[in-house]
Length: 271
Ligand code: NAI
Image (cartoon, rainbow, N blue to C red; front, top):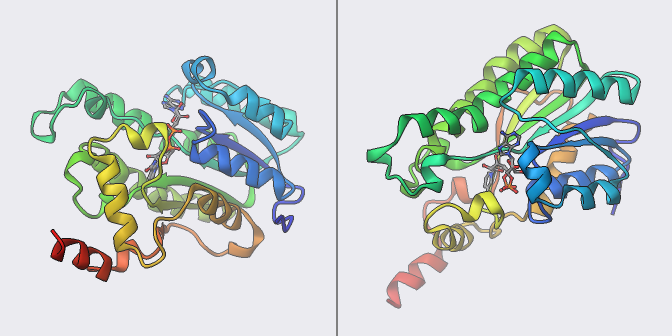
């Protein structure tokens, strides 16, 4: 059900690869709430994924950009302002990738070239897009910028590997840039720490099925779905959260606040 929370607002959504992507759900929910959006992803994702199908559904333009390239980001934000005929109201950073995870390197045996690549794609890209938008003065007053994070930034999940460090950096950028952008023209910057979700990036992590199930059993509400995450993003893009900034917001069915659950105890007792 739409509440038209984003009526008249214009946004850029990074990271829709296929219909499982969290960004895909956010794009659909934003459109359902009256927004106009531009979709963007890396060139390879445009070839491998199904973003064109999403663009058709959303009646939106696609602008290719590698989120690690300042040149691409400058072009993306400039072209978007030209296309919309004005500034942008919201941006979603839904990007993550670790070469060490892909190549199954252990945390105690990281390849540092892989580490730098993953950090750039997953976390520094957030600073880059914020800096580009800031210098172009591309975001309207009280605009809202979100990135997606994971609780491995605060607690250890061994197989999440160097992505944990990338997420810690990402959340720190939201706080630090949130101060400067808030002072500049009241732009809000937050991260949403989402439950494990079955997507291309998520399923790449070793043991994903087990920690999906573990989180589901620990969380009193169960794991938060990507559809619900999209609704939360829309609320944070909207006027209803005008004073929320510099936060890492858990969207996890209560996982981050639960020590143990009866479901898990029963499971261990029955072993
Ligand atoms: P996904 O695989 O559908 O999305 C990842 C996106 O990053 C893809 O669209 C990919 O093309 C894009 N990307 C990679 N390199 C890029 C580059 N250089 N430039 C531009 N885009 C690039 O997976 P998902 O799960 O939807 O991931 C979205 C975000 O949600 C990520 O930040 C991820 O870490 C985060 N997240 C995911 C969870 C999960 O369990 N799936 C849990 C918590 C957070």
